[in-house]
Length: 295
Image 1 (cartoon, rainbow, N blue to C red):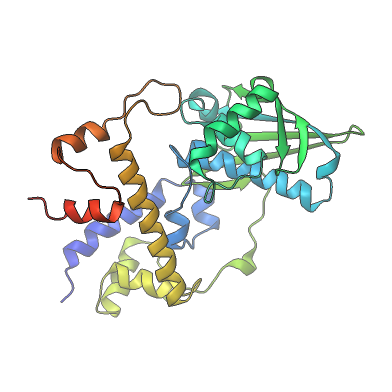
Image 2: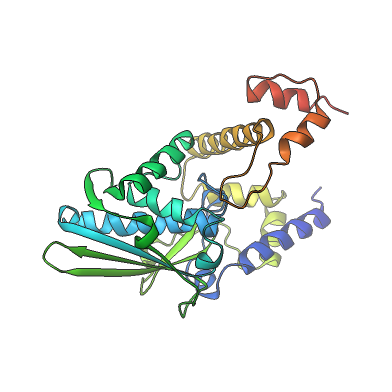
């Protein structure tokens, strides 16, 4: 028997999530995989850290695709609006440096982030995509501008100049959830898939769940197979779980201040010690197993 009250509660959450995206984004990219929503990346913010990282990553990759990477002599990144006002605390400048370096937010060794950014600051240079060195001083080549660009509060403009004086400019918007839109970008309609159970409203989601005599997760499972096979979905979900588990484990066992320069004390370790004062786990799996046994 399907519990309609539970379905309606969950659909409200889904509706709220989509409602927080911009009107343009919802109108033009209506199909979202679970893996579009649950992303692996470096925090603390999907809009202020992950988004800007992906924006400069796209910019550098577009230059490489045009076979002009070796000609670049300088790059300046301008951060507008909210990215300017709170970017330092959210590590936006760090994300810019790493994105230019060719580091990927999903695979980077987070233990090396401080070392990599300190090297860029000290040498005042960066190796674009890790292969083309240019002069780059984060204090002057990352510009924080409090004014907003027309489309969205989280605006990013990236300027590049070649040795012969050619200038290239691209504008991006970090619209939330790690999603990035390039100004003037046209959505490729051929990339839109035909989902077996499309839903634009919570009511349609409930209707599909009833058709399957199941729940919202059953609807999502069927739709997800539009992008991936069942084995791929399971493998990717397992990887998400492993990253989540490791992140929480490290958070509960790492004392000191949070990165970002705001001098915020980590609270999780103290709370964890109160909950499990005698714990001495070396593996996240053993730790979470012990947590499940707590009353």
